[in-house]
Amino acid sequence: MKNTKASEAGFTLIELIMVIVVLSILAIVAVPKFVDLSGDAKKAAEAGVVGGVRSGIMIQLAKNKAYPATLDAALNGLCSKTNVCFTTVLDPGISEQWERVSATQYKGPTGATYTYTPATGSFQ
Image (cartoon, rainbow, N blue to C red; front, side):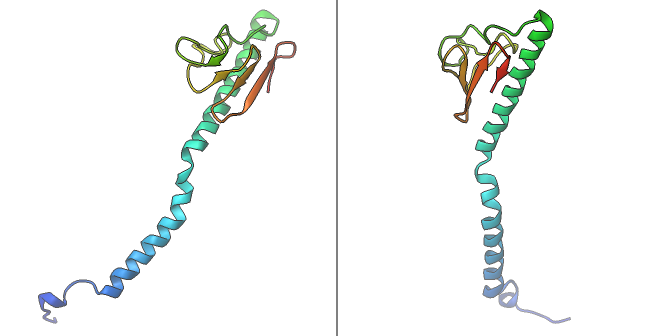
């Protein structure tokens, strides 16, 4: 067994630099994967709402033998707790991140515009 002094114990400068380089490379590779997670979350949430609205339209068709004339009674503008959107087809509707542009047009959180066509039940 070799007897070492306290000044000889520990890592060398080269070893520390190599660890820093390896961690830097890992950070460079991993960071871009997590940068736009909020954008991906908005897209996924929007797709979920669109799917829910489309399902709600089909449920209304099955119940009433007709497509709903309108998706809600909201005013044009941002959806909020006092201006809830999609109440005809979703319970309790949407009160955040969506905007009612007109009686048949809505804008999602990503900026995409969707149009409801009452004659065909299309929400594209």
